[in-house]
Length: 276
Image (tube, rainbow, N blue to C red; front, side, top):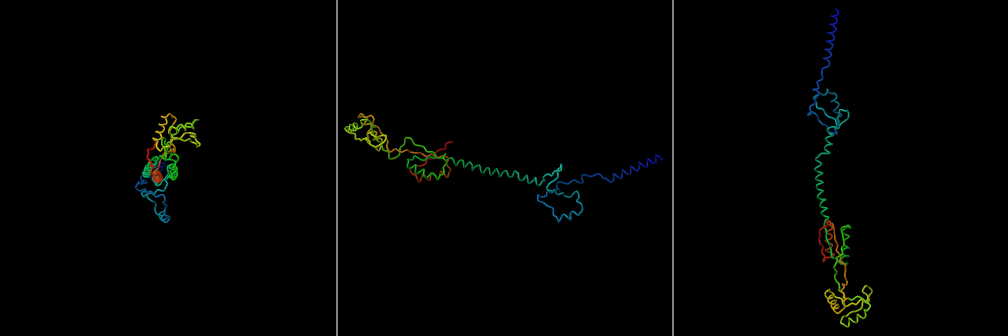
């Protein structure tokens, strides 16, 4: 009897195990797979329609094969919200390479302009030679050009004299000036003693000439007569000035040209190479 009771117990356990196995069917993971073509990315500002959601919620459960709409954020494996594909797309659009060509075109367009400005400010010229009267007239018109201090330089012209110069023949003053004057008159050299205050007070003046040749001829005659101290001195000498303009822009050059034509038509501008 004992073996019979043991057999019945074993059969009951076997039947119970079979029943349990039939109640928990294995999960078919393939039935929950969703095709990528069925995914639909909603826009960032999408919101569900309150009127449409109620009937939908009351309907039958959604089957595994229905399209799945993604929210703006998805849950990462670590439980933190990660940006949705739509947000990533917008972020990538901000840094899209398509914006780079526009920026390059803008930089490329500004580069020639910068080179033109630099090349534009490389014009140089000279104005002169100017006597004191012309120089004062020219300087009166220059403030309208708005020149920087480094753009204008004044140079004294050496070895040149202005118009209206006379050449004076004289003998420097000495202790015997009065006796020397009488002696020269006796030999046919007209003269007089300089009376005005200055460096040449007491000198003997023997003549004033408009050309240096005439003055030099008289001085040579005096030296042949034994008066070696006879000399020639230009009188009425004026200092001539040359104005040098550097780094002028187109507008400044145009203003300078107009000033030259108006103030000194007889003294032209000369374009020069700018020093580097």
